[in-house]
Length: 464
Image 1 (spheres, rainbow, N blue to C red):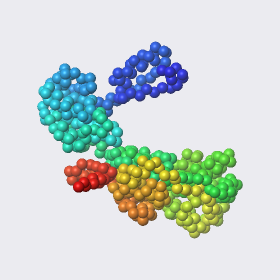
Image 2 (cartoon, helix red, strand yellow):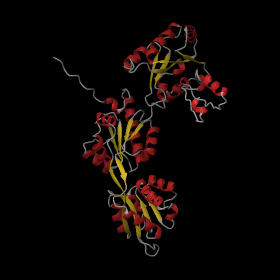
Image 3 (cartoon, one colour):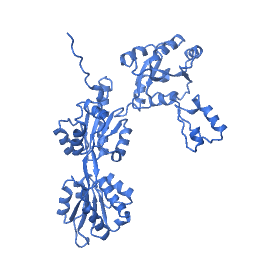
Image 4 (tube, rainbow, N blue to C red):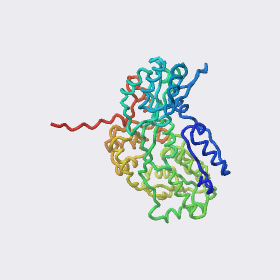
């Protein structure tokens, strides 16, 4: 209220739907009393949202009756009523209390073979669901070794009744927990800016990406060469400018802004981009590239589509190539072979980033990550250099043969390789690997586990 009176915009978040929150009405009345305008955004109650994420529909086409029970406030009469009915019952409780509540329902009249599902950490990537009956849930939870819960009681949603469904039906409806990388902790050794779209893609597969930069980008030690090239760009020295990375686009853009220039300075110059992400960075700058490889998104792919120099059609024979200080010579050599003169300019330097926090380093070396995505040989070298070698249970995914070779040279087992050198194809390949791994576990009748869950436990020392 103090913040609102002071002109601040205040957001009051509640668990589930505001209409079911015990304090929301009082808070709205307090706002109304002081003339403070407010809005109510409807939400989804946990008792409805969690079963939906667990693949447990509460109603069918016949419109079965659904009852909701909060075990924290339910009295003996409430338990008796739901026990005597044949409706689907959604119980908000804790994992530690599920077995006791199941016994209460049996005492109240429900049959011991009545199906139920129990879900904890619903709608998060830690979600787990068990299918059992009122009579067997205690044994099911005991076999799962989840009790007692670390850190105290864990909120749970239990669905009791025929709509809680048999195991074979939930297997087909559990859309969330069956995602190919569900709950996987995936290390993405790229900066937050570079990893944004990749991390979003990984989340769509159910993964939890952790972005750890292994390379820091710094200006060139001697900026004069870059300054001359940018001035030459404006004065008509070049026929083409070729961008081989998002960082190159950023470096040129920053130099433009330093000189008070904008995208109009590219007028009359042909622009090439090595791939989709670089092209996207150019479009955000206001420049639509004339050439993006139609095949492989690499220097070799760019050369395949690059036209040879023709003195009749090309008034200028020079290409401006702003690159990193450690870039390979493939593109330069190829352009020269096609008849072009190349100004190969260091636009930025790549240096090894600072080590990540100790907790992250321990997770890398100790098997806390389920997978690592390596997008270049330098990310392999730098990650090992600043954080140590990933544990052997961690799935290693590489963007191409050269990166895989570097990983193997560092003693890593490569499990996944992208079918083409694209970070998004790499994520797709990891998802396919995860899906096959999950299917194999189910077919073998084994519990689906993440790679990090298969770490060997430390043996206790023998005592005499």
